[in-house]
Length: 355
Picture 1 (cartoon, rainbow, N blue to C red):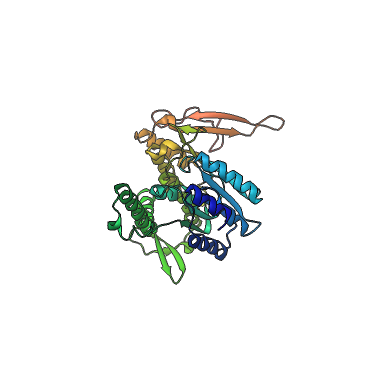
Picture 2: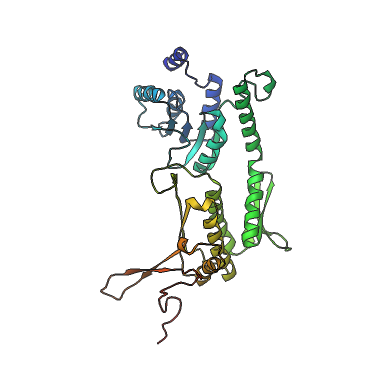
């Protein structure tokens, strides 16, 4: 028994069982993981063992218990792996983490597993893995009748719900996403899976589905943007003291010239979509910065204001003007009025000056 295992036993600190730790380390090696995010440090036994796998391994681990934090820092220092392990102090549902990871390991409060998953899955690299510890909870998830304690039964139910959520996540989310694109843009997405291959098809009205690669650049350009916006809408806001609204962190989405390769009708739908998102409940925590030369996008936002679908104070127009040689560039602000028209619109911005 190692010193850390002995300490955990003497102080009744919950740590991974040997079989579980062996499984985790094998999965990390099988998937060639070199970045690891752990929710629930405890005394840092898992973080230390993971860091030992490869000198290139970078570990970020989160712990909220002050006593555990003190002991974890001591153990990390004594292991000589401080350069590889970063300890973040705080509640995993409240702190913010930067970067992407090859593996995310959920080993904190089991009743919150689903919330942890929803918050941190966006930090997973492509082909990365998420591992949740003790999903069977000592066999009680499969046999809840064996639990005689009310609190334990409630916890078991939440773990079981997490099982169900994971099992149905992909299909349910795809159905909601494609329903959203259908309502706003008039097309839906069909996902075909066959022997490890995935094909994306675009379905418009009664037309036959078309493979995404056979469509114009507009669809291939818009889908990643729409996916990013959809994720921002569906991901719960984080608590923060910076850039906040009612204590929650604001999400800034910056898009450069979304109108490229888009039909004017689709540009107008894009502008209307921005207005609908901002006016929604989730829009309280989302801010768009759009760099555009599209009259269709600007006009569609104005129409949404005119139809009382968007507060004109929530849409600002900033104009960057190139000055004559020898002079500095300058910035002007033009605002939408309550009728959806842009006040102080500069002559010649979208057409030749007329004198």
